[in-house]
Length: 129
Image (cartoon, rainbow, N blue to C red):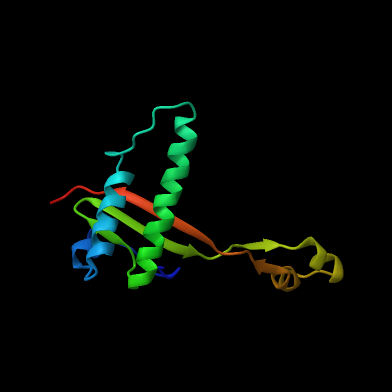
């Protein structure tokens, strides 16, 4: 999984053809193509819900492949994918403020804490040069 401080340039991501494991290479190619929408085949009621669920399943599997191979993301032709942990943001904790009466700006800053990190999973189709 990509580190929060990494800057990802989609065009510079490694191509999945560089994966030595043929099964992983083929699977990554299939998942990227499916994510691009070429092979979605839903015909029943609830199409959009199932499509959204499938997109999340695909992104989760691509994230696992990315982590397994230690890559910052991957691409195949113009189809790109990255998964990055995004650090939580600071927020004001009113409970801590109440504990620290006689507030100064420094005390308010001391009452801030970072939220929980979350995953940013990005699929993008870039223009090929």
